[in-house]
Amino acid sequence: MPSSSLLFALLSSALAPLGVARAYGTSGGGGAMPPPVRRLPSSPAAPIIIGYAHDAKSGKAARAIEDGAGVIIWSFVHMKLDGEKGMIETALDLEEIRIIRDKYEQVVHLAAFGGWNGPHPPGKLSGKEWCEVFVEFNQSRGYLFHGIDWDYEGHDDLQSPTAHFTLETLDVMADFSVEAKRRGMIVSMAPAESYLDATAKPESIDATFSLALDLPPRAWASDRYHATDEDRALVKARGFSHAGRQCYAYVLAKAGISTFDWISIQLYEAYSPFAHDVHRRKLDQNEALMMRIRRLVEGYTVTELPLTTSEYEVKIPPSKLVLGVANGWADGLKFCKVDPSAIRSAYQSTRESYEEGFLGVMFWTIEEEGREGGAKLTDALSREFWTLDHSGEL
Image 1: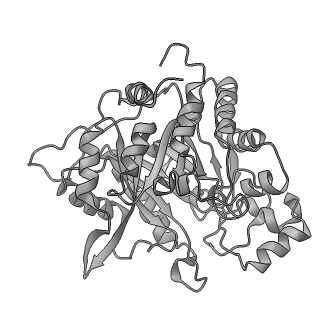
Image 2 (image 1 turned 30 degrees about the horizontal axis):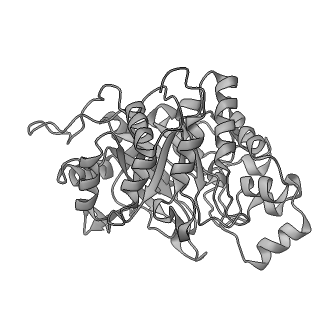
Image 3 (image 1 turned 30 degrees about the vertical axis):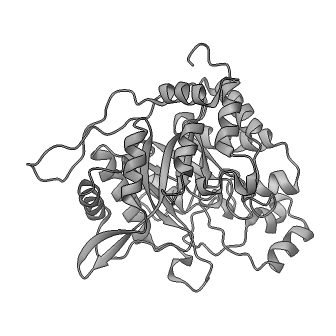
């Protein structure tokens, strides 16, 4: 195993963008063109490590990069109306982010919209118009971000307006994404597992679209998924009813899979189907991961979509698939823990089955790295991925 400094240098080389994408800017002519937009490597030798962060001053984002992270997603930015005018609001320290970006030039930086309990887009502006607002915000800050990530979720208060989606919100996400991609930005989404649920039984209610974000977690509540009386009693006692049902399929169907550079499935969603499989049913983690990867890559059908065509086959190529996991904060029950060795094994199995591995691994959150003196997931993943057979690529 090489030293951490050598590993960082090698991973940086592997993650260096290949070429440049078209530049993006405002729709009008004139003015200096922005810097070239980054493009991710199309065939990385190992999964790209993607981490969410919110505290640029903590020093942990820089440490994660040196441990092997190739993408930092900064959480969060929000759409806000000032009268009739749209604006982007954030509590992020943008100057500290700039320092990190300038120091580690090989790293991709995205701005994430959303978050648990976070506001959804206000009305009045279309997705294309909101994209214009974001471009102006980003341009005024020297094109700090290389693109955007969607992380809209529900709310603790089930009476909150954001305890469900509206079609207007999903339309903003889809139309903003199309325009952002047209302008050359990197575009990603990070649905909670229930929001894009590949292991839902075909032709069941669980494979139908819903705007609701206040549903019971189906794997813990339904006999169709081996839920026990103990499982049902657990989620009932904790008053948990915050799952969704295939809502992000609408965005994929409307915008098209080609619009997105990757889709990160949040396996760490509270009481997720994945957590039930590995922590309650005791399935092997690699088996549980591959069950999802196969369904996502080979396709599964979502029905009852309020679009011209009511059915959509969710089909994500490995090159756009990212597995979302948790680091030290996860409790191994409500929030799943995934062994880095299982991720490495799943990557190998994916490459053997489809002639390419999945694109990457995302985790929440960088600020929890080394929690209470514990292990750092970025470092553990990098060390596992080093053992992959790179066929001379690294």
